[in-house]
Image 1 (cartoon, rainbow, N blue to C red):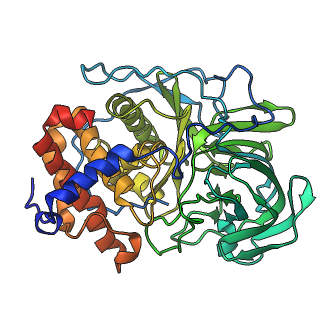
Image 2: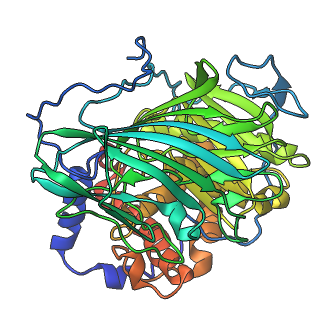
Image 3: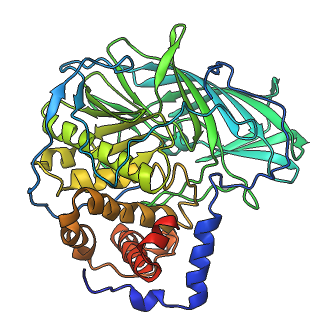
Length: 495
């Protein structure tokens, strides 16, 4: 344990500590309130199965290798395993039994919920030409409690240049809409008639993405062997005393998402391997993916992915990596299984059916529902064991499946409610899987950087990523640990 630099600025009052407790207990899975008594007309994803019941983390100093890699064995590919171009799908030997980690058993993904926004997308990806043609249907339910004269969508691809997002048509309830504006990321639809509370409307859009080259530090776009599609389709932003769409920053996430139900029907070339937020099945000539109660749907496509696979209970975990990084790709698969197991035990059941861990050329890691990205540098630096960036940051991003995916928050104004929790989840991971590594984790991930500053601050407060991370992520971890000491371990775990 290091000197707790955070204690002086955090001791504002006992009222603030109580306020933190109240904030945690009042967190909802949807960012906008939905009165329990509301009843909506039923709208289920049109191809619903009737049987179905941007967080960057800091680079770290080089870690030392002390833990041997787990043993991997060949196994027949599972029915939904993508076809790899160079290696057979692999599975891990079972996780070693412990009194802490119990097997996770989940039922099938929950069906679409009528009061949540539904998205149905038909998309055709031309991998070589870097284009995506999309037909999108949005069923939006007005749970705001007020009549809406407009609806605001986020259209993040438009931030990358005027030719990236090309809108062909948009209609409301089969009537063409002509009164709308697109200004950078903000897509405002001015409605012919106000949308009354407790009523619903259907929006249909046709658009094309001319996918841009990925910036050296960015994630959206293409490079020589991969296309990453993040926040790629227009979505309705939450209504919280007005439409909530914050300004972007060079660091931290600015978007806020309602929980939604998403179906994607995708066409690609036969040699393209797709890592996605959800499992796939066939819908005629389309490959169909369904994701329920999620923030967004993310894809990564490549003709060069190699795939390793494992499972924790009914949760299928896949590691997508490139040639030359097999040891790292298999190791993060093992760590992902450990993380899903312990977090499902300590927090709540893993909220989705699958988890994809994807290697890509970025500077750090980033989480999305059912899919995380990790920097190729982490794979290249990997030399074995768990004391490294690949494991710590991989576990951090996986924990966001709970602190971001399952429990929503305003990532711009209250980033501590997901980033602090994700950072401390790393501590919990090592505590139960590598109990002798606690002092190493504190020094390597937290105290090396001299964390200081108020934890509960917006992304706009800080002048640099380093100062932002030091306060929100790292001082946040110390805050959580002090809270745990005060409460006692049993009460903390229940809390």
